[in-house]
Length: 117
Image 1 (cartoon, rainbow, N blue to C red):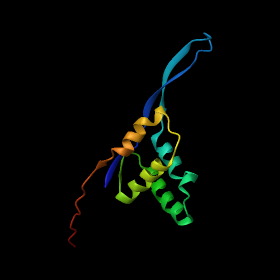
Image 2 (cartoon, one colour):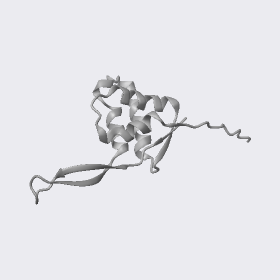
Image 3 (cartoon, one colour):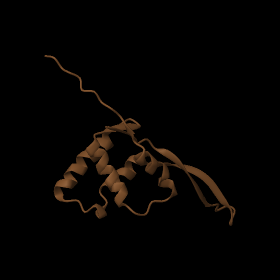
Image 4 (tube, rainbow, N blue to C red):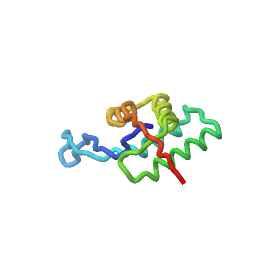
Protein backbone atom coordinates (compact mmCIF):
# COMPACT_ATOMS: atom_id res chain seq x y z
CA UNK A 1 0.00 0.00 0.00
CA UNK A 2 0.97 3.61 -0.45
CA UNK A 3 0.24 6.62 1.71
CA UNK A 4 -0.38 9.67 -0.46
CA UNK A 5 -0.60 13.24 0.83
CA UNK A 6 -3.64 14.88 -0.73
CA UNK A 7 -3.98 17.97 1.44
CA UNK A 8 -3.78 21.37 -0.21
CA UNK A 9 -0.61 23.45 -0.14
CA UNK A 10 0.03 27.11 -0.86
CA UNK A 11 1.71 28.38 -4.01
CA UNK A 12 3.20 31.83 -4.51
CA UNK A 13 1.84 34.03 -7.24
CA UNK A 14 2.81 37.37 -8.72
CA UNK A 15 0.16 39.53 -10.33
CA UNK A 16 0.17 43.09 -11.72
CA UNK A 17 -0.70 45.79 -9.18
CA UNK A 18 -3.63 47.69 -10.69
CA UNK A 19 -3.06 50.62 -8.33
CA UNK A 20 0.63 50.92 -9.31
CA UNK A 21 1.14 50.15 -13.01
CA UNK A 22 4.40 48.37 -13.71
CA UNK A 23 4.56 46.95 -10.19
CA UNK A 24 3.80 43.40 -9.08
CA UNK A 25 2.01 42.11 -6.00
CA UNK A 26 3.11 38.83 -4.45
CA UNK A 27 0.63 36.57 -2.75
CA UNK A 28 -0.28 32.98 -2.03
CA UNK A 29 -3.25 30.85 -2.85
CA UNK A 30 -4.14 27.23 -2.16
CA UNK A 31 -3.25 24.55 -4.67
CA UNK A 32 -6.08 22.02 -4.67
CA UNK A 33 -4.31 18.66 -4.81
CA UNK A 34 -7.37 16.39 -4.87
CA UNK A 35 -8.96 18.31 -7.73
CA UNK A 36 -5.72 18.21 -9.71
CA UNK A 37 -5.33 14.46 -9.21
CA UNK A 38 -8.95 13.85 -10.22
CA UNK A 39 -8.62 15.95 -13.37
CA UNK A 40 -5.50 14.08 -14.47
CA UNK A 41 -7.09 10.69 -13.82
CA UNK A 42 -9.57 11.38 -16.62
CA UNK A 43 -7.12 12.98 -19.07
CA UNK A 44 -8.14 12.05 -22.66
CA UNK A 45 -4.50 11.15 -23.40
CA UNK A 46 -4.98 8.05 -21.18
CA UNK A 47 -7.41 6.73 -23.81
CA UNK A 48 -9.43 4.89 -21.17
CA UNK A 49 -11.93 2.24 -22.22
CA UNK A 50 -15.39 2.16 -20.71
CA UNK A 51 -14.38 -0.41 -18.09
CA UNK A 52 -11.26 1.58 -17.22
CA UNK A 53 -13.31 4.77 -16.76
CA UNK A 54 -15.55 2.91 -14.32
CA UNK A 55 -12.48 1.74 -12.34
CA UNK A 56 -11.03 5.28 -12.43
CA UNK A 57 -14.31 6.63 -11.13
CA UNK A 58 -14.36 4.20 -8.19
CA UNK A 59 -10.90 5.48 -7.22
CA UNK A 60 -11.98 9.09 -7.84
CA UNK A 61 -14.92 8.67 -5.45
CA UNK A 62 -12.56 7.21 -2.83
CA UNK A 63 -10.26 10.24 -3.16
CA UNK A 64 -13.13 12.75 -3.19
CA UNK A 65 -14.70 11.26 -0.08
CA UNK A 66 -11.44 11.24 1.90
CA UNK A 67 -11.63 13.92 4.59
CA UNK A 68 -8.02 13.45 5.73
CA UNK A 69 -4.85 15.00 4.32
CA UNK A 70 -3.51 11.53 3.50
CA UNK A 71 -5.07 8.54 1.83
CA UNK A 72 -4.06 4.89 1.79
CA UNK A 73 -4.01 3.40 -1.69
CA UNK A 74 -3.77 -0.17 -2.86
CA UNK A 75 -0.80 -0.73 -5.18
CA UNK A 76 -3.11 -0.94 -8.20
CA UNK A 77 -4.81 2.34 -7.24
CA UNK A 78 -1.46 4.09 -6.84
CA UNK A 79 -0.31 2.77 -10.23
CA UNK A 80 -3.47 4.20 -11.86
CA UNK A 81 -2.64 7.64 -10.49
CA UNK A 82 1.04 7.29 -11.36
CA UNK A 83 0.17 6.35 -14.95
CA UNK A 84 -2.06 9.42 -15.27
CA UNK A 85 0.77 11.65 -14.07
CA UNK A 86 3.34 9.97 -16.29
CA UNK A 87 1.07 10.41 -19.33
CA UNK A 88 0.20 14.09 -18.85
CA UNK A 89 2.41 16.75 -20.41
CA UNK A 90 2.22 20.41 -19.43
CA UNK A 91 2.98 20.68 -15.74
CA UNK A 92 4.23 23.96 -14.30
CA UNK A 93 6.14 25.15 -11.25
CA UNK A 94 3.05 25.14 -9.03
CA UNK A 95 2.73 21.39 -9.67
CA UNK A 96 6.19 20.48 -8.32
CA UNK A 97 5.11 19.64 -4.78
CA UNK A 98 2.22 17.51 -6.00
CA UNK A 99 4.52 15.66 -8.41
CA UNK A 100 6.99 15.00 -5.59
CA UNK A 101 4.17 13.68 -3.43
CA UNK A 102 3.16 11.24 -6.16
CA UNK A 103 6.72 10.10 -6.86
CA UNK A 104 7.66 9.69 -3.20
CA UNK A 105 4.40 8.28 -1.82
CA UNK A 106 5.40 6.27 1.24
CA UNK A 107 5.19 2.49 0.96
CA UNK A 108 3.32 1.17 3.97
CA UNK A 109 3.32 -2.46 5.01
CA UNK A 110 -0.08 -3.62 6.16
CA UNK A 111 -0.58 -6.69 8.29
CA UNK A 112 -3.73 -8.68 7.93
CA UNK A 113 -5.62 -9.18 11.16
CA UNK A 114 -6.70 -12.76 11.75
CA UNK A 115 -10.39 -12.60 12.63
CA UNK A 116 -11.50 -15.49 14.78
CA UNK A 117 -15.20 -16.04 14.95
